[in-house]
Amino acid sequence: MTKKQNSAPQRFLTGITTTGTPHLGNYVGSIRPSVAASTGTGAESFYFLADYHALIKCDEPARIQRSTLEIAASWLAAGLDPERVTFYRQSDIPEIPELTWLLTCVTAKGVLNRAHAYKASVDKNTAAGNDPDADVSAGLFMYPVLMGADILMFKAHQVPVGRDQIQHIEMARDMGQRFNHLYGEHFVLPQALIEESVALLPGTDGRKMSKSYDNTIPLFTPREQLKKLIAGIVTDSRAPGEPKETEGSALFQIYQAFASEQETAALRQAYNEGIGWGDAKQLLFERIDREVAPMRAHYQELMNDPAKIEGILQAGADKARRLAKPFMRELREAVGLRHLGLGAQAASAAKGKTAKSSLPAFKQYRETDGRFHFKLMDVKGQLLLQSNGFTSPKDAAQAIVLLQTQGAGALFGLEGKLQSVPGVATEAVEAALQQLIDAKS
Ligand code: TRP
Image 1 (cartoon, rainbow, N blue to C red):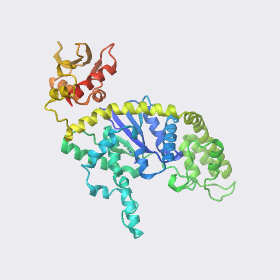
Image 2: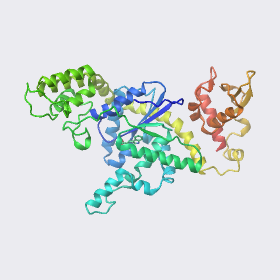
Image 3: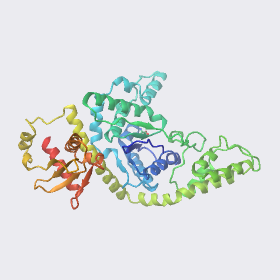
Image 4: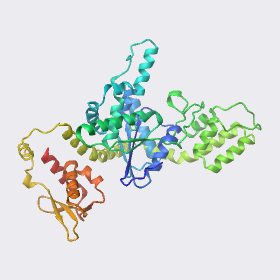
C-alpha cells in the first residue's frame, strides 16, 4: 500500500457494508491488502463493519446479522489482528449517529442532491417517467453524511476505497472543512486512497466480480463448491492443443491475482502451448485453494463460535469509543451544546460531583536543563503521569489543554511526549482525566 511519508502517524480507516458474503474480489481488492497494510509499522488502522449503512440497502434483519458475522469472521480468518488495529462495528458507536447530525447541519442539501448513488436513483426514476424520488429513502439521501461521520470521527488521513467511493470522501472532506471553518479546527481532512495496483478481479462471467452481477466466487466456499464455481468460469471455445490468449481471459486474471510472477509466467507459457481449459481450471483451483484452505479452516472455527467474534467486536468498540467519547464531548462543546451551569464549579457542586479542590491536578515546572515539564497528580498528590521536556512553556500548556479537553483520547496523539509512571495503571490515568472533564461539563 502506498504510504504518505509524513512525520505524524498516518491513520487509515475503511468500512465494509454488511449486506453480503465476502468473495474473492473482496479478498483481493480489499481484505488482503488491508490486512497486509495493518501489519506494517507506523500506521494506525481502523476497520469497521458498516451495519448502519447496510440498513439503507437491505431490510432483511437475518441477512444483516449473517453478513456481519461472515464479514467479521472473514477479516479475522484472513489475519486481521484486532490487537494491532481497531476493528469494530459501526452500530456499537453511538457517537457516530450523534456526529452524523452535527454534520447534517453543516452539509448543503444541494450537495447531497448531486451524490452519485442518490442521483442514479433519481435519473432512473425520471427515465421511467416516475416521481424522481420514488422508492428513494431519506437514508439513501443521507448516506454520504453518515459516511462522513465514520471518517471524521476517527481523524482518518487516508481512506482506502474503490473508485466509486471517491466522491463520498470528497464530501466528508468538505463537511470537515465547513465545520472547522465555523467552529475551529477539530477535524482532520481525509483523502481517498485508491490502490492503483490492485486490479479489479473479474467474476465467472468475465465482468467485474460483483454481487450485483451474480458472478461471484465466495471466499470461503467449501472446497468442492470452489472447484465447481471455477469450472464455471467463461472461456473461449479453443480446443486443447490450440494456443490460448491470456489477454481478456478471466481465468488468467484471477490466477494472476493469487500467483507469484513465476507461476504467472508458467501459466502464460502453458497458454501459448495450448493447455486445455479443464487443466487450466484445475491449476487455478489448486492455486486458490492453497492460499485459502488454511484461512477457511479458521473461518469455520470462528463461524462456529459467534460469541467469540462478538467479544472481539465489543473490545474493538471499547477501544474506538475511548477516542469517540471525548471527541464527541469536544464537538458538542464547540457547537454550543453545553451545560448551562453558572460555571464549572457551581455546576459540578449542583450535580453533587467532585468539587474542584478534590480533583486531580496538572502542575507545570521547569527542569534544570531549562525544559518545560508537567505532571498530573491525583487528589492525594500521588504522581500519575509525567511529560517529557518541552522547549517552550506554551507547548507544555497546549498539551495540558488537550488532555483536559479530550481526556484519554489525547494520550494517543501525545505519544512520545509523555511518560507513564511505573506502578500506575493506564486506567488510573484515564480515570483521572475523565474526572477533570466531568467536573468541567
Ligand atoms: N460506503 C462504503 C462502501 O459501500 C462503505 C463505508 C461506509 C465506508 N462508511 C465508510 C468506506 C467509511 C470507507 C470509510 O464501500
